[in-house]
Every structure is written in C-alpha cells, then in structure tokens.
Image 1 (cartoon, rainbow, N blue to C red):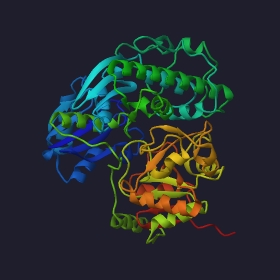
Image 2: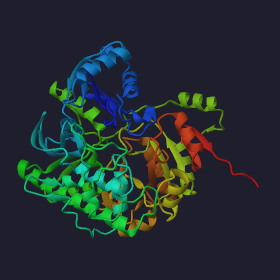
Image 3: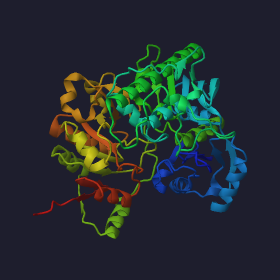
Image 4: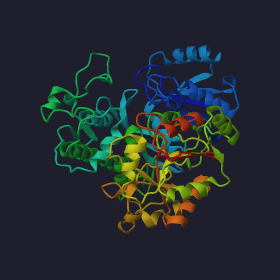
Length: 542
C-alpha cells in the first residue's frame, strides 16, 4: 500500500509544504518544497516538486498511490481543490483522506517514537482552528485530551515577540531564542501570557484587530496592537542595532514561554500518568524549552521529530493513516529521506558547470584534515535531511575550538547576525563526556549543558549560556559523516565538529549539486566536498 502525505496548501498562510511517501511499514521518502522551489517555507504552495521526488524515489506513478492524505480537515472545499490540482498536474488523483492539523503533528512524533504510550504536546500558531493540543498516545490510537483554540496561541505570542524585536514572524523565532541567552528575564510579561488551571491564556488585546474572517494580520503588517506598545519602548526597526533592552526582552519572553510549556507538561502528566513525552509543532523546535522538558522529574523519555514544523505534518498525516491500516513503525533513527545524488550525477553537474574539481579516494580523511587546518567546508553527501536542521548531509563544517570561528562563519559564509550560535556534531559514544546527559540526540531538537572542562575544546559551538544544540552521530546511521568526525578526533583529540546548515542567509538549504556549487562560490567557504569530489578556491596572488 502506498500512502502519500502532504502539507502546505493553496493560501499564502499555508507554509512549509512537504510530501512524504510511505509503503507498508516503511518511510520511503520525505522532503520539503522549499528545497526545490528555493523559496523559504514555500508559502501558498502545494508541494509539487516534493511530490514528484517522492514518486521518483519510490519508482511509482501517481496511479499507484492508494491514498493521498492532506493535513487540514477544516479547509473549505479542499478535497475538490486537491482533486482538480492532481488531475491538472498528473492526470490522475488517488482517493483523498483528511487528517486534523494537530493530530498530524501528534502522529509525526508518537508513531515513530518507539514508545508504547506517551503524553503528546503539540504547539504552533494554529491549524484547523487549534493552536495547542494535549493528547495521549497508546498503541495505534491517539486520544485528544485538551485543545486550545486560536488566537489563544503560544505561536502567536512568540510571533508577536519576534516581530517586536525586529525579526520576521513565522521565520525568525529561532533568532529570538538565540538572542535570549544574552539577556536577563527582567521584564514582567505575565499580563501578556499567563498560566491558568487549564494551561494558559494569551492576552488578545496585545494583537491588532483584523477584519471578520481573517485570523491574523498579513506577514507584511505588524501583529502587535497599540495597547501592546503602550507597555514598552518603540519596536526595533529591522536591521538596526540590537541593544541590552532587546536582549533582556528576548530573555523575558523566552523564560515565560518555557514556564508555560513546563506547566502544560505537568498538566499532561497529571492527565496521562505517562513518563514518556512526545513534542511537535513549530513551537516544538524551541530547543531551549525542550531542554527544560527533558529535565523534568516525571519525564523518563522524550521524543521530538526532526521535522516538528508544519513540514512534518506530511509524514504525520501519512503515518496516521498507515497505522490505521495496521502498519507499524520503528523509532525514527534518522532524517535522511530527501534526494541523493550519485557520483555520476555529481560529476556530470560539475563538468556542465565547467568548474575545477578533482576526485578524492577518502573524502572523510581529507575533510577532517582540512577542518584541522582551520578551513571551512561545504559538505554535500548522501540523501538530504527532512526538517530544518543540517545533520551531516547538507552541512557547513569547521573546527569547533577557535574562539573566532563562530564570527568567521557568521560574517564570511552565512552573512548573518553575530549572536547566532552554531551546533556541534559529536560521536555518540563520546557525547556524555562533553555534554551533561547527552546520549541519543540525532535530530538537534534539544540543548544540553556543555561540561565546563571541555568548553575550551569547542568554544565555537557552546552558546553564551553554556549550552549547545547537540547532534549525536552513529556510524550505523551516517557512516561517512561518522568516519569524518572520527578522523578529526584522531587529529585534534576532539570528537566534535561545528555543523551548520549548507545555505546562506535567507536561502533554503541546498538540495542539488548545482545549488551546492553556487553557494560555495557566493560565500566564504574554503572547500566543497561533494560526493567523492573536491572543489577548492585558489588564493589570488598579488
């Protein structure tokens, strides 16, 4: 049985379109439309290119898909629109099923968590009129326990904060999270978001009023109201200097969000008694809050999928339908479900571009040596990651030890703000020696405290608050990436490399060899390791 799950949509507010194809008990392919369309978050798009990729990876046509599943059950006329779209684009349309937005999020976590039962917490801006869901998963069933309806939304709260601080809402929330570590939570924002017996209440007076039938202001308009601005100074103009005030405001907003999320987790445990916890939804990408959840005394195990945003609903909706048909899935061990390219494909592309390149017999050893020499490497290997994190398939890599490496990459390669942190990839068997409590963390969804005696060996990947968003690497999951880090360990005595996504500011992560080469030449990367091929930049002679 082939099940094709979709997220995205026809409206501009439908973001993070993706497709996922399941065959029986196996996930065959999953990818985000933004990687193909080259538009971040791919707003207002049905994931046409991602669909074509999934069908190609499975070596089937649309006529061999048994069920098409869309993650949105309240969209008016959506079945008719999807049927018309598929007939127009493919000449055929499978039977269509709809899954509720937050049940798709919940399914994306629970059904691949490996847990027999779990409390499930999903949080985002909104979907199908719901912004937060508390649920209980057991066996093949997810039971809804409590829902919070928009605009009473943690996502709306963080959207508002993000925009007030001069960043783009629905895109730059992670910047607020990173900036918060530089400040102190000195502002009392409890009037804006407060805990109550049911969970939380977001003060709707802080948001601008919109015409009837419209959920939120457009992305081009301010989300906050005059009432909100009466409490604070003027909002930061995008691109202007970031001050201590902005750092402290970010810290205050982040701290309050964490307190509310912890409160929800406590309530979820009271309702379910389960010591297993699953988290999904866009707010589930807040790795600082996730770290607090992991440390709660009643949480023995926590699972957060690599694609927690709306892109993850493509997999989640397909999983829900597949489980309903009796399929069973193991714990998700990797996120490498996107396109991959053979050496033949890569060599053909490099020759077409007419760039200088050479073949290398051992790219893992070569890359480790270059990193040990202080070079910044573009790394393009195997199948692309599903989700927003670079996990050693489409990554930029560097030595984590030099104190100035973070600034070098932010300024010369990524072209982004200096406060933005980078993540460490570490050999799994060494993780606990460098980060407290780190063991199985393959998806960069949680922060861990760096051990103080190890910080000098990896200063570029330890944030100002002493934490890191860790990725543990197993050889059985990604052998070439593991071997490269192992080679670097032998050269440097540090089993860690700096890892960030292979893209520059405001662009999606690279997907194809052509995009990798373009990003290499338009940035300050020293070397591109793409399949078994090497591209290096020559220094100009004066």
